[in-house]
Amino acid sequence: MKKTLLSIILFGTVTLTSAGDGWVQSKKEGYLKLSQWWLVSDKHYTSTGQIDPNQTRATYVTSIYGEYGISDRLTAVLYFPFFTRSLSYDQESATTGEIIQEGEAINSVGDTELTVKYGLLQKGPVFLAGSYSLGIPFGTVEGGSDGSLQTGIGEFYHIFRLDASTSFNIGGKYPFVSVYGAYNQRTKNYSNEFRYGFKTGVELNKWILILQAYGVGSFKNIQNNFNTTGTSIFGNNMEFFTISPEVGFKFNDHFGLSANIGAAIWGRLILAAPSYSVGVFWIP
Image (tube, rainbow, N blue to C red; front, side):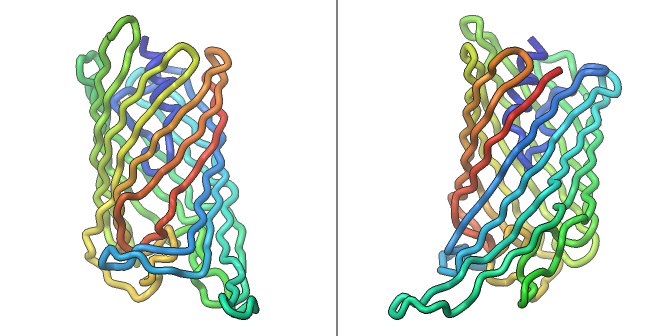
C-alpha cells in the first residue's frame, strides 16, 4: 500500500510542493518525473491585490524531479529545471497595430533545489516528515534590455518544511490527505517567506486524481525597488494562494502521464493567469 500511496502523492509534485507529504521513500527505491510547466499572462496582481494589464509575458520551465531512498527514513530529492525560458511578447498599438514595444527572451538553467527529507513518524495513522532544501542560484537574475526578464532569483535560499499525511481505506481504495508548513529563508535581496498547503488524492483503477491548494506569504523584511509591478514569477514580496487540480493515467506500475492546472484566486506582485504543466513519471 505504501508504494501505491507514494505513486499517487509524487505524481502531483510541483515546484512549491516538492519533497512533500509525510511519507518517505524506502531504501534504494525512487521516483523520477520529467515535466513541462508554463505561464503566459497579459495582466498581474499589484501590491494591493488589484489586477492591472501589462505587456504579455511568459515563463516556460522544463525540469527533472527525482527522489531516492538513502535509508528507510532518509530520502534525497533533486529538482533541476534544466531549461527555463523567460520572455515578453511584442506589444502592439490597439488603434494602429504598430509595435510599440518589442518582445525579448532569455534562456538558461533555472534555480535548482537539493533536499534531504527525514521520516519522523512512519508507522501511522499519521505520518510525519521534515525536510531541508537548499536553493542554488543557477538562474539569470536580470535579462532583457530593462533587466526585467528572470529565470531565477540570484541568491541561495533555505527551506525548512514539515509535512503530515494520513490515508484510509474506503471500499478498497486508499485516498490520502496531507498538509504542510514551511519557512523559506533568503540570504540577500529577497524577503523571507512562509509557505503552506493542503493536498488530497486517490487512485481509481489506472486514473489518479489530485487536488492541491497552496500559498506563499512574505514577511516583507526586505524592501526592494525591482519587479515592483508584479510582472515576474521571481519578484520580491510576492504573495498568492492557488488551487491546483491534477489528473493522470498510469500505463502500468512504473510509467504514467500527468496534467495540471494552477489558478491563483488572489495574489500580490505576481502574474495573474493560470499555470499549466504536463509530465511523464517513472517508478522503478
